[in-house]
Structures are given as structure tokens and as C-alpha cells.
Amino acid sequence: MLQKAFLQYFNNFKGFSREIWILTLITFINRAGTMVLPFLSKYLKEDLNFSYGQVGWIMVSFGCGSMLGSWLGGKLSDSIGFYRVMIFSLLTSGLMFFGLQHIHTFEAFIVAIFLIMVIADMFRPAMFVSLAAYAKPENRTRALTLVRLAINLGFTAGPALGGLIIMNMGYKGLFWVDGTTCILAIVIFWATVKEKEKSKYQDVKHPGEILTASVFKDIPFWIFLATCLISGIIFFQLFTTLPLYHKEQFNMSEYKTGLLLSFNGLMIFFMEMPLVSYIERHHFNKVKVVTAGTFIMSLCMFMLLFNKWESILWIMMFSMTFGEMFAFPFSNSFAMSRAPKGHEGRYMAIFTMSYSLAHILSAKTGFTIIEFFGGYQTNWIIMGILGLIGTLLGILVFILVRYEDKTFKNVFFIVLAKFNKLILPSFTKQRLDPIKGKKWQKAIIAWRYYVTARALEDTEKRKI
Image (cartoon, rainbow, N blue to C red; front, side, top):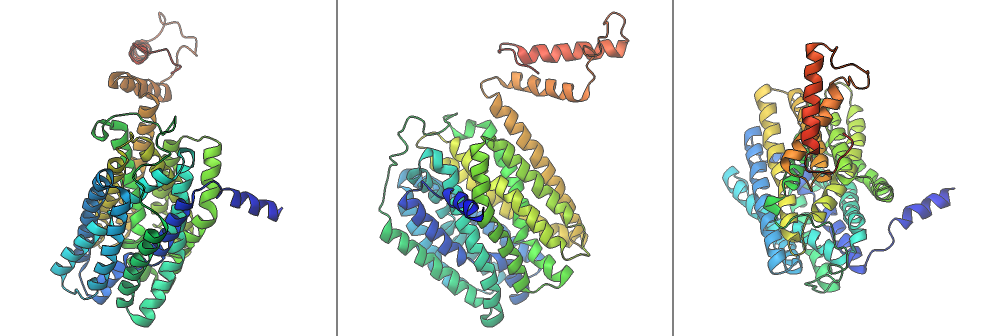
């Protein structure tokens, strides 16, 4: 029985090209060495003695640099190729991390972190495009999941080791490790993977679900980005406000904070690939899965209102991990599926920019709420409500994609008809004689008839 379970688990990892495995390896090396980000807010607050407001502005600068870098990375990937962008990004950002430890003033740190993130986050859209180039279309979601597993396996070791480095070497040790692993990862990539401008998998019969010619006219995609933005804002609380909350509310050490983040990575390593494979085998709708993940994240924020019991942090992290496993792999896959051939870099640039913007808003909004209201509880309530809004937007995206061949007017009345069905009584089922009905009953019948007729106008009839 146990042997069968292991075989089923490892079967999920079959079918990937050599290049995908190398990309996974360098992602693991880079992420395992990413120790600055999880402890950045603590470093700024405790080592450099910056105020909450200053920490918030530095996180804003971090996010702005990330947004610009994501856009440049996508544009350059479409023009000069993802390969050169990836090499330039990791090599240069690794060198820049060495110098960041020598900056101690607020103004200089804002500029430095902005420039580093412009260079560092050029890597992300280029990496997503490389996955599309080296993975078969039917394997792309699993390839994205494999890379996410490497990211989270790196997080399993990285934060815990980072906590130990801080305790023994201080925060400066983190900058040396972060820079070194960036350079090591890209040297391995350069030595083992040759430049490839065009994928042999992009000219097959079904390269993806090409639905629109321009990213700026893709309305469902932009609403979907709003859902991603909200899920990102909630998720990044794990790295901005929560580490300080651990210390101030429960007096947790850096090591225990690292272990909590490592628990998240360990769960994803063992559970995400089987979960993604199961969802794909059963053909669950991607937008529905992402929406469910956003809803779970929303509930996790409300869990933090129980602030007298330290174990709630572990329960919250357990639940948040499931939300993450639902939301993030399939949001990547859906975004890539919307991109016409030749526009993958632009789509993935804007997609990654949504998470960069989430990082800005997550940090600045969270710290501002905490500072203004004098506590963390209001922040958790606002984040939870935001998650519910993201859930509703996800439902809207599902409806728009399902009826994408129809006009906006048709979609509006289809949604309105479904809303009528949900909240208004059906007098047809009650066998009410319209002639004998009361005025308010006749009004409802007339309203439902009008909406249903408009929903079916110029379309094939559907069951509403």
C-alpha cells in the first residue's frame, strides 16, 4: 500500500524535459538562498531602527521596482529572448545584494532596494516564458507546479537557515548568501542550457487557448488580475506584517518564525504536485480553483482574530497553504493560456506585475492600518473582507469566460437572470395563475421574463 502511494506520487513527476529539470534546480538554489525577503521587515525595524512608516515606504519601493522589473523582463523576453534576460537578471542582482548590506540610511535604502528589484524581477516573466518554451502544452501547469515545488522546498530550508545565520552571524550574513546563490544558480543555467529563441512546442496544433489579440482588450484577464492582486496582498502578509506579529503578540524567535514558513514549504513539496495532477485529471475549471483558493485565504485572515492561542498560527498556515496550492499554480496556467503566440512575455509581465503591486499594497496598507489603529486585529479584518471581494471577482471571471462569445449586454442579463433565480421566487414552479396573482407577484413575473428574454437574445437558448 505504501509502495503504491510512493509510485503514484513519483509518477506525477514524469514527462518533463531536461531543461525543465535544470530550471527547477536553479530555482531551488536561488530560492533556498533567498533569505533577505522573509526577514527584511525585521532587519529594517530591529537592526536599522526604522519606524513602521519607513518600513512601509521601503516595501513600497521594493514593490515599485518589482513592477518595473517585471514589465521590462516581459518586454525584453519578447524582443531579445528570455535566455539573455535571465542571465543578466540573476548575475547582476547577485552582485547588487553584496552591496546592499553597506547601506544604512532610509533614503539610500529606498533607492537601492528599488534598483535591485528592477533587475531581480526581470527574471520572473522570462522564467515563465522559458517554461512555455521548454514544456509541452499539456505539461505546462505541472511544469509551473514543479518550479513552485522547488521554490517552496527552498523556503523549507531557507528561512530556518536564515534564522540560524541571524543568530550566529547577524543580518549581514543573509546578504552574502543571497547574492552568492543568485550567481551560482545562473552559472549552472548558462553552463547546462543553451539559448533557444523559439520553442518546438509552440507550433503544434493546439498551442493554447488563444482568445484575444491584445492584452489590453482582454477584459476577463484584467478582472482575473484583480483576483490575483487580492490573493497576493493576503499572501504577502506572511512576509510583511506576520513576522512582526509573531514577535510582538507571541514573543516568537526568528528561528520559530522560520520554522513556521518552512512548514508551509514542506506541505507544498509533498502535496501540491499530487493535488494539481488530481485537479487536471478531473478537468476542474482553473478559474473556479483559483477562486476557491482566494476564499480559503480570506478565511485564514479571520482566523488570526484568535490572538491568545499560539497554535492558531499553525492552523492558519496549514489552511493558507491549501489556499496557496489552489490559487497560484492555476493562476499562472490560466494567464499563460490567455496569451497569443508571440505575446507570452507581455502577458506574463503584466501577470507578475499584479503580484508586485500586491507586495506594495500588502506592506504599506498593512503597516499603515496597524500604525493608525494601534493593533493587528483591524488589519486581519480588512484583509479578510478583501479576500471575500476577490472571491466574488473570481466568480465574475468564470462567468465572463464561459460566455465569452457573447456581447457585454448578453453577459449582463445572463448574470442578472442567475441572480434572479437565486433570490426571487419562481411562480411557474408554484403553478401560480398570473391573472389571479397579486400586483407584486405580477411585477416579479414580468421582471424575470424581461431579463430572461434579454439574456437569450441573439444567442442559442440556454437553461438559466
